[in-house]
Length: 337
Image (cartoon, rainbow, N blue to C red; front, side, top):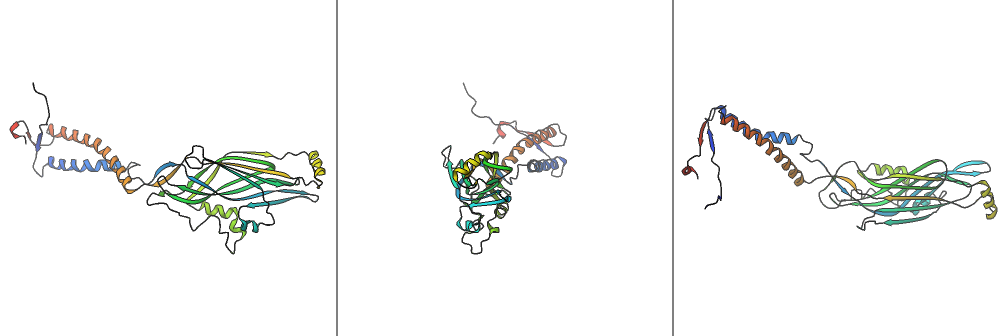
């Protein structure tokens, strides 16, 4: 009793003169077998990768740098006049705004929910003291961060979160909850190690600068520098809850007599910001090896499919003698190699 151990096909071979139609067709078949899959693959949108997207949660570090501006009105016997308050963590900035500087109480709380070593949520609170004749209608704020991404493209840069809220009525509390997301205009390079593209172009001017002016630290200038970058962060609020100020006049009078101050009753204006850092898409330029590997896989997928069709077509043409050829079949065992 014997078993089949190996099999080998017997070929039917087709021969033709060098300048015959069958020979020209065979040359065209060989060229088409390469060029047709290449042409089809090249015209797909994924053959030659120009950029890829990876999802990553940036490593965010709050630098405790803040700038707050408060716009409101102040009542007096002559009427109501607009007034302005300023606060920052930078001493040189505060000196420029000494006339409108007022120091609030600031609290921060950082939370790593999944304990992966990255900041997931920052809770920022500010309590600004006001007198009874002062009201706030608008708040603008900038918080500074240090951002690091490292999954594919490796970058480190400084960024700011900008918040603005304007109301037509006096406010007592502003509560905002949103995401700090990456904004990029061009895909990032994935070559080499960590890059610090804005090392010499800090968003905040140097506090030791001799000719530092108010225009240098204005929110408009800071945000212009941020928006001109390829990499920046944007604070996108999911919702904002603004609680209006509603202190009855009778209560104001009673508190004024208690404090023995002509309606100058201490009040607190509250700002509460929750900043969440989710996973987000980051566009980057893949390496040369990734580009070539992807192109080769796509080419081979079309090569197999188109090659099978062309092979079956050629087999039909030669088997049915649509082109004149001479046949020779491997039928004799002695002729096998």
